Image (cartoon, rainbow, N blue to C red):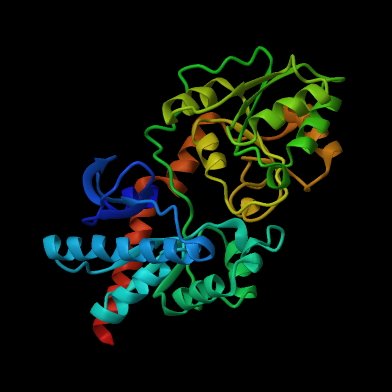
Length: 366
């Protein structure tokens, strides 16, 4: 949705979305506006039958819903000049059909960690799904990965041909500096889905149990999916008194938490380019993270916006938190300005507009 907001700065954008619901017996279309962008949502009934063929039946209903949604859109608004798809799976077949039938070019934003070798979920997809992704990528006019590291992973899997890095985007008017950030003691913030394999919550808490012996701190953990397991780990490592767990925060509540903490902390084993780091920088936070995925393309010592440590290196994480005051950081205002210049709706909107113009110019020449 954020890339749609950025694209809407210079283009007429309508977001289309199809989703199944359990509690309805017929399909319906809802037209709304979100953050100034028009959104068409097509609701269709969930299927609860089919036996061994249930997954195929669900896929068929999904494709039919999308075709009905697009038919209604074209009937009402006419054919779009260009389609921008958010991730190749599962809707890739839809944009390929549009290109084949109406000669409408398409670009694809990609940010799924499943392509990374450390994640490996792409390799575990059924053959048909992997084939659909490769076909979607092959026919795309541009693939827009959020990092060069993700681009390299896609290339290594033989996915796609025409790449252009397009970073994640944030609203820097919302993710802003606090009026005052109190620094009386160290306040750490971790925001993630708390998935243990990727986010390495055990390793993070193990390191913080060692930090506790040398420096006082508070840790606020924001996340929902793995919250109960994370609470158990906090108890296991003797961090119950240091930790506060928050769930289901609104965006405004997340911003408020960022504005009252000093350090955003990640200890992930793999990432692409997490939006949460950009959001934290825009609110003036210091960042301590593992050097994985595309993080160092934007956050590093040279930029004076982050301290990076190697994945699994708990000792380095502890030392970094002990040496925070000795690091040469950008000021809070400099961090916010840097985020504006690289990730704002206006900046990414300009990049998208340029990409769209190039693609449409190539179409006209063809």
